[in-house]
Amino acid sequence: DDAPSNGSNRRAFITGASLLLAGVGFNPSVEATQFVSTNSLDLGNTIPILIPLDGYVSTIHVVDGAIVKSGDLIAVTESIDLNRAMIQVNTAIALVDNNSEFMLGEYMPCVKTLLEINESTNRQFEEKTRFILNSVKEMANSGMRDTFEIPARELSVLRAEGESRRSKRILAAYDQEVEQLKFRLNTLKQALQNELKIVQDMQNRMRLTAPFSGVAHLMAGVGSFVPKGGYVALLEIKK
Image 1 (cartoon, rainbow, N blue to C red):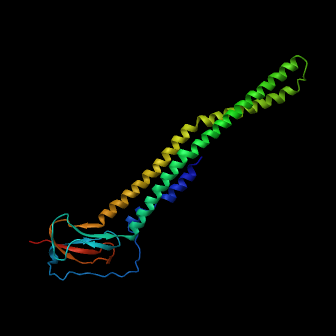
Image 2 (image 1 turned 135 degrees about the vertical axis):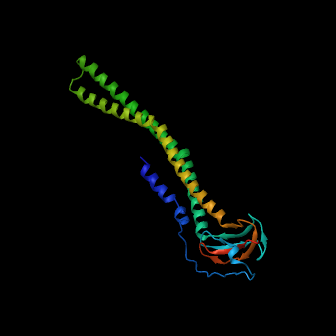
């Protein structure tokens, strides 16, 4: 049964992106180079544009004091932890795909061939031991052989029958085992794809857009480190 090893693989593959999204951050050695707007603004009418995770400002798409509309891209930020999680999940998915191709395309067909050879060998051995038993019985009945050989021959036949039945049961269960393996691999891949979607959704959230129309006041420049929940810009509502 390969369930324990499959469980171990699954634990090895799952990347912990959910923990990352719960707030696990990193301690950057690069100090923030803060950019603060020099334009006057009414703080009572502003909404902060916040970064969802510790990260750096990759690009700024507006100038300080620019009028923006709802949905306009203000800045793109980047998280090292998020990038690492993306690499880990994509690597895990590739491993599952490669393992699936090997297990289903090469390994399991070899197993079936071996099972078929084993079943055929045991069936032939059963037939041969039964033939010898019947021959001994016929010669014993005609007085050509002693009857003391019969119990040993019967025991050999019983053992051969047992091995033959066992190999037939294993071969008959092969298709079911393949389907269970497919199910486990598909379940693992689906779990990883769900993790990938979480990371992708979070990367989309690192693209900071204006929630409504207003004036953008930049609070960070390109290359600046901004801690989780930190201001990248302020959006002022003009009355």
